[in-house]
Length: 360
Ligand code: PMV
Image 1 (cartoon, helix red, strand yellow):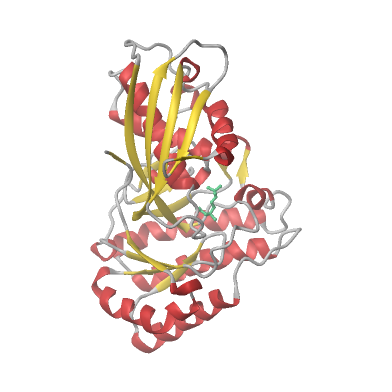
Image 2 (cartoon, helix red, strand yellow; image 1 turned 30 degrees about the horizontal axis):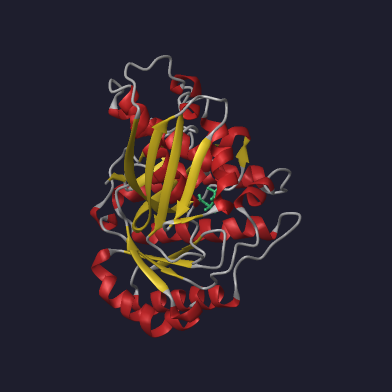
């Protein structure tokens, strides 16, 4: 089995004075949710997500050799402007990954980053942001050690992204990504995300995700606090076991294309995630009245039309509406007619399943 130590480099064969890279990395939406973790960002249960296509972070990383004085040196720009309040998170990230990238203190970095989705839309940019930065850092390591295999490159990029933000490790490569050991998914690992290795039915090709922005406010519960709430949670062990079971069922569903069964798992996972927050101590309700209005409207529409459209939720009030491409026109019309009124300023984002990070 691969261990984290396998990603500590023993030597580099090249030296590089300066340069720059630019990568985009997408956001992702979990179907089986990651909620609860152990030390070092090891997930308490395996999760699986669809990679998104349009919601992305684009990060340019410039680097220039400096004297190694034992400190990290970097400037951070967000949409071209210095952004001091993002710096502590990056500093912490660099400290966490230094053991895997021993060159970090040899360079001064300029990190220039922007998102394709509106700032403070309530869509977390930590997954796409940390993945984009991890890709750039791996490009530097590849310049120092061009012999590395592509497999190592992507596994390590995902491992680094995970240390920035857990779910970021699912934003590196592939359309359907599994993170966390699962007995029946070969190659699955707690250390990094892997492309779902089994068959995926054509029903899931170009699957659509329309994100309804119900509440764009800052999250009331950071995911760090949220994951922590699973320690000593009365239902934690059962929940972790259930995630394994649900993932097991999804293996079959991905292969058969059974959308009815898909919907059951996905909606149950979303509500379970929120149930965990409602039953923790302290307890939280992250859904808003309009979240529930939307869920009920989707159920009514599905009942009446038999169109396989469903919802999932992140740790917030926004709703991801998921549906196959062949019903996209009808569902989008339904969203415009009946759901947009529940969105803050009528805002929503049309996205679909994508392929992962890209070098620009
Ligand atoms: O990656 P984090 O630590 O922000 O946690 C994300 C957790 C959820 O988005 C709620 C679920 C998931 O699997 O993405």
